[in-house]
Length: 489
Image (tube, rainbow, N blue to C red; front, side, top):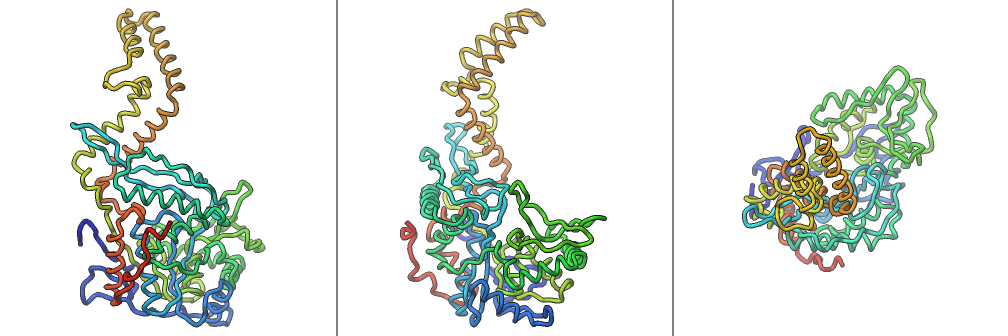
């Protein structure tokens, strides 16, 4: 469905009989209170483990708990809508909202995808590219919770950003990162920035860090069971993965000498690696040395913390694996979950659709041409530079296969090597631009992309998203009286 360039849709995982629908059929499933987790462990009901775990992380025992979560990266509207639904449930059901921050995320973080305009000419037209702008200098191979908060990199105000909203949103992200230099780590810095950005539409909620989950009563017991009988744990895990091939999850490795557990640990070089123990067993290490992997995170959350967990698209698929794993391994059924996502296209980009591809093709070849003639960076015309043309003329005038011709060819490449040193920084910038253009050209319709940071969108687009969630849940009014974006500074 489309409304002024904005589309919303809902994802409900097969087998989940409760769901939150946007634009769904009038007789489709509606949000309802799901079943709580049930089963027992060590002769104690799951409710006992839940109370002990909630107490350990400081979550109230007397109220319903609704959770959602994500990595502390730059959230797009499809992620924001999970938090909007969380806030609506808090308001409508008097529930406690909890955000699960995946603080041991490994991968790009502190990097913002931005729609950037590269000026063309009357024939080619302007080119729209996806440019990845690093605001923080983080190591993508190391968990965020093992890296320090840091001063954001200076913004390049000369960048030609696609819309005023992009420029304003980028400036706001930069300012908020600078306001949270006192965070305990980079994960906290990014999570606090994102929480503040959400605040006009979603009130701040209690935070639980994924890296702390193993140090809870249920977390400690699950780890102990993994080490006591790793084969039982891993066989149930792998059967569940095989039962849900759409999850595209990898099987845990088992060979003649060792078994891989669904846990991470820190190696001597500071990298996050999989935990593998001997078939014969191994004593449990200090829990501070271990980190939970994805299914362990959601298992603990839905067994001992949440009464309802709100997933996005990917979580709606892989968490079915977790449900089957917990049921087969321990006979436990986790609490209910729903899945919600949306697609919002960024206003103002459609004007680049017609001519953008020709502009991108020019940019893709630009890096190659300048590498072979760096002095063209200082020229306005499209021909070769004067020095390169002189070398080409001398080569052309030399006899075919002669020593003189070969020598001039060598001199040309020596000259180009020197020029590449002189123009190094500008050539690198051009090469990055060409790579961005190539990646953007491969996207079938960049103006229709759904994954720009939500803070780039106008207030009315996000207000409308909140209203649609309220309507879908049968409640209205949360948008009225919200704070304004200007209050974020």
